[in-house]
Figure 1: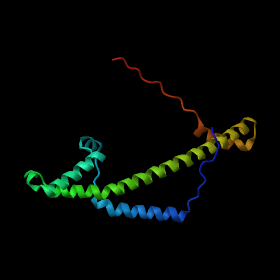
Figure 2: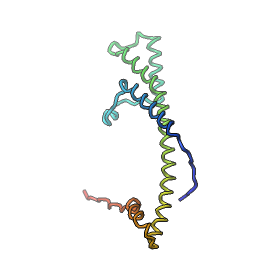
Figure 3: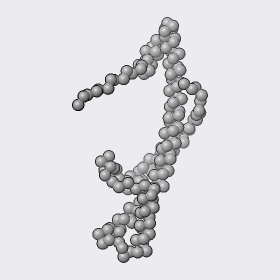
Figure 4: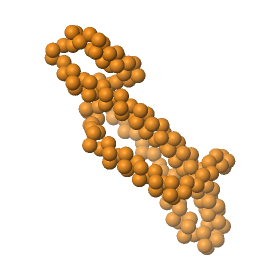
Length: 160
């Protein structure tokens, strides 16, 4: 276990509060336009990726230059609205994804370091308790519940 400190940051509360407020404002402003999906819905939809974005954009371009090929049963207005929505939201989604990834990485690194330090402290308390230092006992009893090794349940091998 490495005790090398890789991150040493203190974010001012004012920055955290301002970011939370702005993120809540973004969520509130976009809420009327966003659509939630169930896992089943997500699984049943065609997925638009990098290659298909270009396909949709080319289709839009061709529809503008060659409208005679637009099927009569295709809702052109809805297609254009959907394509515009994707074009508008993709940069926001990319930025949100980058921000989320960076925040999660920072939380993971800081959390790892905090947990390592906690384990060092627990090891010291455990040793003090085993040596009979009375003041260590209540701390040890409390923390030992959190650091207790959990036994793995045996896998259920059912024969079919």
